[in-house]
Length: 392
Image (cartoon, rainbow, N blue to C red; front, side, top):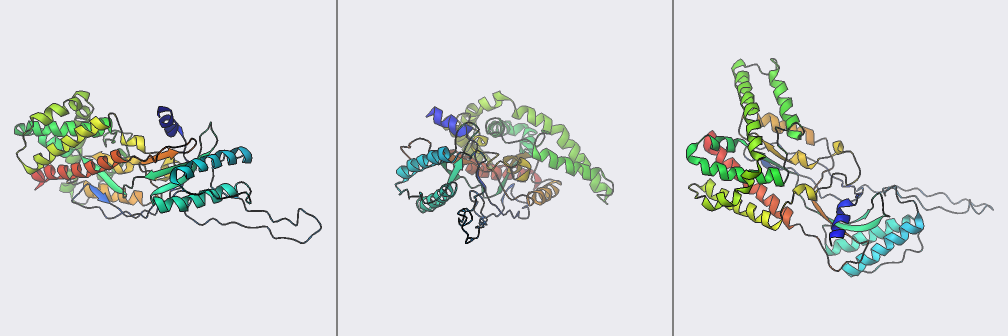
């Protein structure tokens, strides 16, 4: 099983996920917002255009033959028809045995049309059994192509932005020290273990967004009201001075280790604190069930071999931000929405089952992903509730 797991991680996948991205207007209420997209598909969703050679009546046998069209869209490693065909059809038999479907005869088709037709037919059969399953041809740099079935966890093109300002505000209140410490431990899990990027790190996407906003406000012509501009600049100075301090405590392993103790000793007094304790319990359970598991482990960044700059990656929709209530938030979301409209693909968590070997059971466990994103929604609402105490 460990060998298969390593094999899955090392496999370089080739998948086209067609996606039309329409980013909704940013909400002023939640930092978790959905934006619409249709269901993504494997390979290219556009109908393949093929051309057939015209049959010419001639004594020359070559000219009398109509050649089958070439099929595009498969890995360039597919160049040895006999070996590749044997490998893929062997995987197809394993797949059909597991799902109890019939393997049709493709002897009348030449390579690679036989492989293309096989995948198309298998996809139709499997879709009847599981509409979310995708049949893929995959390969890596070492082995011949084989078949796999993947299931993608649909993030619903939601932006999961966690504001850090509520933690900063709670830390200023001595009487709420325990609340701040428990919230810190929870956020440490999402930063240290899960791997959600922090906006104050210059390698993150949100760092770039904030930097653009900072540059705008340093331009005297951007804001006509001098008082407003000074207010924003003072706020930017606060963010710059405090974000590094908060990053330091988020990076402290001991703060995460204290999660269990802080949860046990915490006695909530407000509705927001009751919710926080429930979230802390779920986080602790997630750590027990999936130790050291990061959501990034489930996200492949090169499903179709395209450059990362050509699609929405995890760092676009998963990030810490400063606040969802401050004077920068509207500009922040306007810039993000405008930027993401330029993409037509998205990286999402997925599970993959290979069929290079016979399989004894269907194996697609997305329970971690389901609990993780449920928790993100809960935590985002909880952070909003804490921020709302101060801003309203």
